[in-house]
View (tube, rainbow, N blue to C red):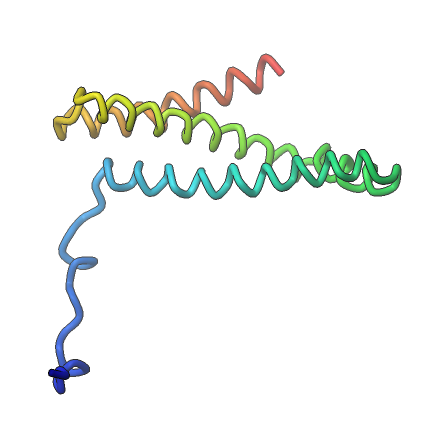
Length: 127
């Protein structure tokens, strides 16, 4: 039977009651970095197709990727790749049954942010 009072019911207050937790935020960031990695892969494919097609097309995308904006995008992409890799590693550890306690999971989330940043800066210095 249809619910006639459907429009009169209050919305779920879950967004106003629950505070963001490190585990949920790091899980959301793993999803966001997956999308970012996909978009960067599109840039890499564009660069390769331009290299195979014509010199002017390659000069455009290569100039874009070598500009300050391209450097910023590639810097963010490096951080996203490291963060996503660490997130997948964290899930592998959880799947094996380790580190599933809340305190340890929160420390792993903080560690993911920190280690991804450290690895990004090491990559920046080396490359």
